[in-house]
Length: 133
Image (cartoon, rainbow, N blue to C red):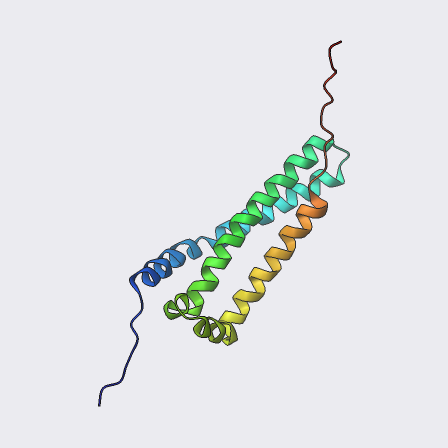
């Protein structure tokens, strides 16, 4: 008696291995984000110019974005290679302890990035060009 085992597509395997490689760098990106956050908090605590606060906020945003991309890759790789082709496998992957852990981490990083985009990046007024008469 033969059992039908659907094979995994070649594209899913390639994406899975790529996500594993990107996911390996997550701790480094997270450490860079923590350093950028510390710098942002230091700049906010001192009375510096709006341009410096904006630059620190944008640096923190870039570091969070990189950490978020690595966390999402690690989350997808945790779900397994079959989850790239099948939404049911993705749901089952989220239900595992490791899958739930990575889903929570991704949600936490997304929330932190959105909060920084709303309140952490200082607004700088645009220079007004004087019209020649």
